[in-house]
Amino acid sequence: MPQRDVLLYIIILAWLLAAYILCAQAAPMAIPHKTPRSSSPLPLTAQQDSFNFTLLPNYLPRATTAVTALQTLPAACLANTECAANIVATNVTFSDCGSPWTICRCEGGTYEPVSLDTAVDRLARIPVGLRRYIATIMLLGDDSPHAYTLTTGEIHFFGDIGMDGWLHEATHTFDFYYQHTLSSSQDWLDAIGNDTCAPDSYSLTNAVEDFAQVGVMKFYTLAHYGALPLGWETECMQNQLKYMDSLPLFNKTTLFGTCDMTTDGAPHQEAPPPFDQANLAIPLSEDSNRDAGTATSTSATTAFASPTRSPKTSDSDASRQSSKWCILLMSTLLLIVLLAPL
Image 1 (spheres, rainbow, N blue to C red):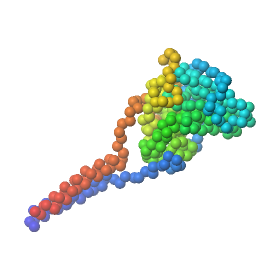
Image 2: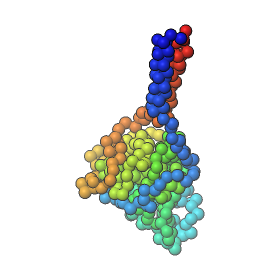
Image 3: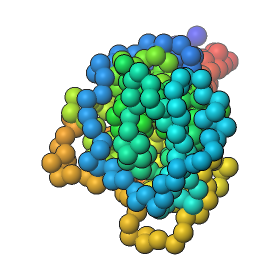
């Protein structure tokens, strides 16, 4: 082989080696993430043991237009077997919706349930875009405050669990209305798998409870300039927060509008009587809380953007794309090497 061809051959081999090194750097091996099942405990770290913040000062209650004691118990109240005493049923109507919410309260038992006034106040503070998914509410007594939500949207409260608990259960009704297609969706499970933490210890129960707890955090950011509570940070659960941002539920117009703005068959979607639009119960962000969080949620500027979800490119997709170009480049150089002697 002539000396000139040998030199050319060496140069081509050098280019091939350089291309291989560049490809190895441009398309690193993707780190696999453990995607949990919706019913499995989450392999994450809890940021805090429990929620220690309040939302009452920020979510103002909607005006109550009617509180009516029912002479006949609704079927949902009659079907309840957890109350061994007397059940009193009440219909409550708010100014942002034309249909009432039924509250069944167990009276005369060993433990006193939360008062009707407190329950109405808590319910009135839940934005109508979420409240519209709540069906019947059962108020019962217990020595340890807790609550649970049925797939029908019916919520059972035992004692007073606080405003964050009401938002948690209400978020369940939204999820359950769509038959768990949100908390069990691959996008939500991937968001969990790509994060390293969850809001609190209870969030680690499974993907369903985490969905409701992250929902509460989202409502907190809406009332605090996008900031999380003191002691929580965004980075380790940014994918879960971004998923919440993408949900139509958090569109400002419908969340703080009236219950007829979205016609999806939810339990409450009847238009309210005419009222002053200026009285919409948009949460107040207190100046004293402007610097409350150590980090800011991505929802600070996009919380009320269009709910349309834009397509996303995952790290693995980008890695595969880079690998395709590297394979093409190296194949071309290898072909040159083979044909060079000819």
